[in-house]
Structure formats: C-alpha cells, structure tokens
Length: 355
Ligand code: GTP
Ligand code: MG
Image (cartoon, helix red, strand yellow):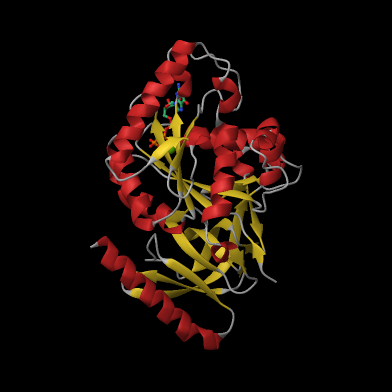
C-alpha cells in the first residue's frame, strides 16, 4: 500500500558558506537524539527522522505549536558543492529536490553561486528556506550550544541584535532584486508569499532547531501531497554519480524516490546514446552507525531498498551511464519497451534543458 516518504531537501549555496558543516551538525544532533537501530546514513544523503527532531527541538516544537502536527517521517538531505565548476552537480541535486535550503553566509550575503543556486531553485519552482549561517560571527553574539534562535535572540545585548538585523536587512534587499520577498522566519505572516530566513550557526548549532521546524512546516504546506506518496511497485529514481569502484566494477549511486529496488532487478537508465539496461547484482548501503567499527567496515549489502533512499547499485551494464539519468526498475519483460520509452522521453527533456 502507498505510504508517505520523507521529502528530499537539497542544500545549495555559494562555496564555503557552511552547507556541509550544517548537515554534519544536523546529522550529529539527530544521531544523538534518535531512536536506537535507525539507519541515519544513506549514499550521498543524510536521513533525519522526525522523532529525533522533536526530541532535539523540544521546547521550540511547543512554542511553534507543532507537537503532534507533523506527519512527514523525516528529511533526506542532499548536499551539493558550491564551487563554480560543479554547476551540473547542483542541477542534478536540484532535479530530485522537493524542497531546498539556500545557505548564505550572514556576514557576506548572496554571492555568485548563491545567486546561481537561487535561480536554479526558482526555475524548478520548489519551495525553499534560507539559512543565514555563521550567526556566531555576529559581533558580540553570545552563543549557547544548540540553542534555538528564538530563545537565543531574546538573550542578546541590543548591539548584537542590531548588527544581526542590519545583516538580515541587507539580505532581504538583495533578495528583492530577484523578485523574492523574504523576512526573518518568526516575522513571516504569509508563508505562501514570503521566504523565511532562519539564522543558524553550523559551529554552535544555534538555529538548527528552528531550521528543521521551519522545513517541516514548509514541507507539509507546500509540497504537493501526491509527490510524497510512494508505492510498493518497481523503483523510480535518479542516478547521481557513476564511478569505478575497486573490486566491484562500475557502480551507480542513485536516489530512489518511489517504489522498491531489489537485488536481481533489471533497471533501465541512460547513457549518451539513449536508454540502457542493467541487471542489479548488489545493493549497498552504509551500516547503521552503531555497527560501524572502522572505516573499512562501513557498508553492507541489502536485498532491497524502499523509497525514499540513497543506494549504491552494483550492476552489469552501467558502463557509459550518465549522472543525472533517470532510473526505472522493470519487474516483467513486457514492461521493458515502455520503460525504455519513458527514459528516452525524460533524457530528451534533460538534453534540451542543458543546451
Ligand atoms: P563547499 O562544499 O566547498 O561549497 O563549502 P560548504 O558550503 O560545504 O562549507 P563548509 O561546511 O565546508 O564550511 C566552510 C568553512 O566555513 C569551514 O571552515 C567551516 O568551519 C566554516 N563554517 C561553516 N559554518 C560555519 C558557522 O556557522 N560559523 C563559523 N564561524 N564558521 C563556519
Ligand atoms: Mg560542502
């Protein structure tokens, strides 16, 4: 039967604004607060279960009146590189996103790849939230580890708050040049018109609770519900990366956004010449953190993965498959021509877009 999957949240922004550190912090805190036995690691993604968020953000959950109102199972975060040379990777990440976080350095504003990311987000029409990171760099800011921003801001000297407001004001002005109306998240009156800005620090963890709760609220209100509905049928996904792995041959790291992928399945994906089949030999996932003894012992083979998931696929026939290609599993030979047709249609759209 159908269920609801976690939304994919792509993290974008200029180089060095703190995207990866922000995710590390989110993952670290969620690992600390999660239920035992939960897999928090995926290939190329981090899964953060809602229960972990609720425990971590406790008092803020009540203040924002969200307790008992969240039905998404959690978030699947996808990191992207900010460097100019990686623009195609950003596009790939953006193509599967249900939601985006645009991370900016609060001390320097939008910057070049920040603008590029913003345009990409706008062109996809996905809802987004702005993390105004490096809050701890605001002159005179008093930090307390992992404190929600709403509580932190009430406990600052006036001059630190004034500096923060000046930075946020500048950011709002910059964003308005791109037709975006934004405001500090606790001042947003209408989330359908204004983009929330959440001040965060990936170093102190301040504002992370706020960011996660705002993401949950925005997810539930603005991601079309059908998009999060998953079935139990053959998998649908996107190839994020294709590479040669020692001892395994060519492997593909993919995101599965619907259905199930099983060992032995035939998948249709695409190379530069068009649709291409491969047969899944092995599916690999990182081990749950508590079972990981050393870095060599990080992965395990699984029989099946269910959406939403990130997985490494070992398959015969992945040579020449391109990153960004769609992936469709077929469970019966008679579905093969249709799957090839669908993949063919999708890649012709991708080609037009990248021209
Ligand atoms: P790319 O992946 O290269 O685009 O960078 P990124 O956005 O992932 O940045 P990353 O997380 O690697 O952080 C870049 C640098 O900024 C590191 O030296 C971090 O320690 C620092 N940094 C990140 N977040 C914060 C923050 O909240 N406060 C402070 N003071 N430094 C931070
Ligand atoms: Mg990074």
